[in-house]
Length: 244
Image (cartoon, rainbow, N blue to C red):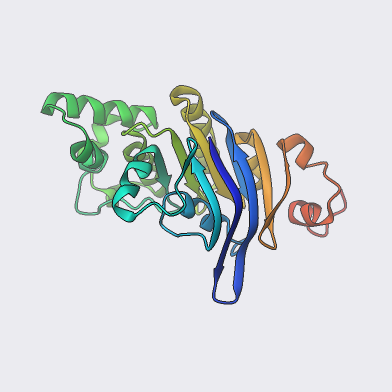
């Protein structure tokens, strides 16, 4: 479980998190919705210590990680796989080398075991292992995203934190990423937080959803109920000026 208790975070005079309270249960996929610049990504970056909240508490598996020293944060980060908006692959490494990077650092595997693990994780995200010798620049953007995800899940984290996973993708490729989020949740049993402004993505991957507005979460509920919520802030985000 990941839990936020009265989490505040400001950048200068800009308060982006203004008392966030949230419990995300084991095995759940929770989507954090909102337009650009409202603090959605700040929330998940605080979980892994890339940012520190000004006040409040964040718990991972019941452990308060809010002010864990940096040298101890690696233990938490191994539990939490971060999937960034961009693929963040190493351009000078092949696909295989990118996926093997974390495994080499954290697992004591023989060469044959490493090769098998790399191939397994590429298949898991829908990439043919025969593409392993290619360089990232030889892949489409969607393929690069999948390889980045293979590198993240190779260490089998308990939690996956997705930062705008469908941004920059055409609708068909984005739908493939949504399907992959659901498949990984089922096959690996991970708990996921999906930061997105993509309403379609939220609809198909989420067990629950919440909208960040003025630094707080509104309308925390299942997607079906979220679409029917009478809150004018939620309806404006979903439908804009359209009457629904």
